[in-house]
Amino acid sequence: RLAKLARLRRIEVDNRLIQQDDTDRNMYLIVRGRVLVYYQGEKKKTYLACLSTGDFVGENGFFTAAPRSATVEAIYPTDVFVVDAAVYKQIIPDGSLASQVLLQFYKERIVDTMMARSDVFGVLSADDRRAILERFFLKTFRAGDRILTEGERSDQIYVIKNGNARVFTGAKTLAHLSPGTLFGEIAAFRGVPRTASVAATSELETLVAERDALRAIIDKKPEVAKRIQAVISDRVRSNLDQIMGRFGFPTQ
Image 1 (tube, one colour):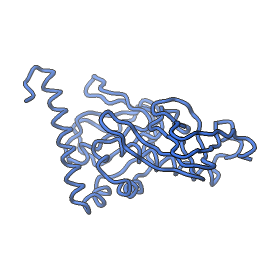
Image 2 (cartoon, helix red, strand yellow; image 1 turned 135 degrees about the vertical axis):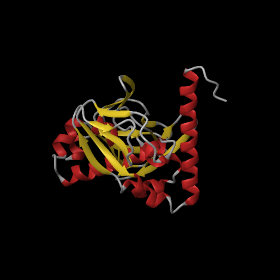
Image 3 (tube, helix red, strand yellow; image 1 turned 180 degrees about the vertical axis):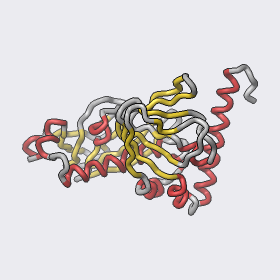
């Protein structure tokens, strides 16, 4: 049924199937060939996966409607089935085993992508990130629910699966968070009070991990733990410099 309903598309070597930050909604099943998945940050390119025949790609944008979080580029001539919303509804009913498998792919890949983009988790190897994926669980919030409260201590680290949230201190909004955003890792790892509050602005689904569950993996690798602590310290120092700079204090 997939072969009959889905359009077949050819991607030549070095051409892109998905472009980071684009807003298309298609998902793809690789029929033949091989693609490379990577995230282009401000300072470096982070390689996330190499996918081949039988793999799905693009499910993050398909399920969340969020901009593409990574680029997918063909490294061999590649043929893919294009799975749009209409095709998906016809071949994969809600609650089916196929639907459950795709949602698991989504969970694993979106968390892995966000960790790879994070200053904190980006220092981990792909294998270490995959081990951490198993520690995340689903938690939902209603619009208006408080997720984190300024001044309180908590050990949770979050990734937004669906919905949106607001970061604020007092009456001042600091940022708006969308699907795929990782937050809460700095205060959780440092064991310090939260520096801002976060509240859901819509129905919100998040993937959550406890700090101690992650430390059980990270602490087995002292060199990685040391690098993570250094990244966190640099981030905190940078944030403090920005705050001091706004008030005219010297930052050096």
